[in-house]
Image (cartoon, rainbow, N blue to C red; front, side):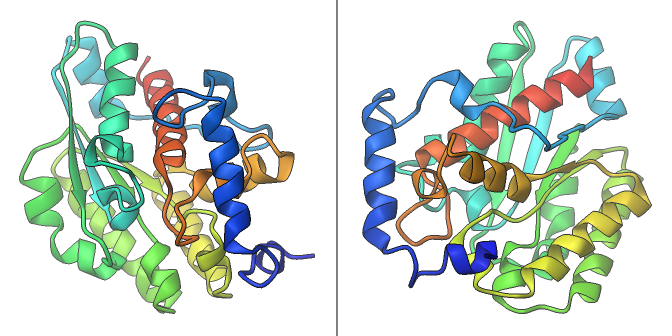
Amino acid sequence: MTYARRFSRRSVPPVVFLIVGALLASCGSEDGDVDHGACAAPPGVDEDLAPLPHFSARIARGGPVTIVALGSSSTEGIGASEPSRSYPSRLRSELAERLPGIAVEVLNRGVGGDTTAAMLARIERDAIAPRPDLVIWQVGSNDVLGDEDPVAVGMAIREGIARLRGVGTDVVLMDVQYAPAILEHEGYRAIEDAIARVARADGVPVFRRFDTMRQWDGSGALPAGALLYRDHLHMNDLGYRCIARLLAEDIVTAAR
């Protein structure tokens, strides 16, 4: 049974997502978070973000550090109960805890609905002009939903990486989320492959959000319904919190 079939809207009624999410939220903190172990990296998903030479050098000098979170709606924070619970806001808090004494700024440059091409069109203003030490570029989700050409998507990613690296900025790619609305499009595989190919060719690390969420769901540690908003696409507070926590751990590991 494929994941796309398993999580089609027909096979999993929306009420199931709401019930599972509510049950997990009830055993966590007031914002729906659960214990730290629940957000741990799942076995079999290697989130090696090294090397991040520019970011690491900035940390070694005692900061401050600036990160730009470039992306679409799941960077903007659609599905979160408030802006402070988006993944970029959570990431700043998580990094501040792990990097005591170092000022951390995370700029949220997510625009709902943006394809990779649309993000490339604003990359100078939103990701280069702030002169960040690191750009986390969340790509692919709207390309899947819009059935975009994976070859063109790959070319746009490569151009964006070249422009960011050209000004001395480290880059981490974040791939698509594991969600029913994504899995309904057969093209998600081709977009995921395009992201992976570009990353290998250009030596850019990838935060493997899709595989991480899939493994969490498959193991039962964090069912997909507990991490997603009621639209079966965007993450909720818990989903953003877990992704931010895992990403922060990987960034700090890469910087040391």
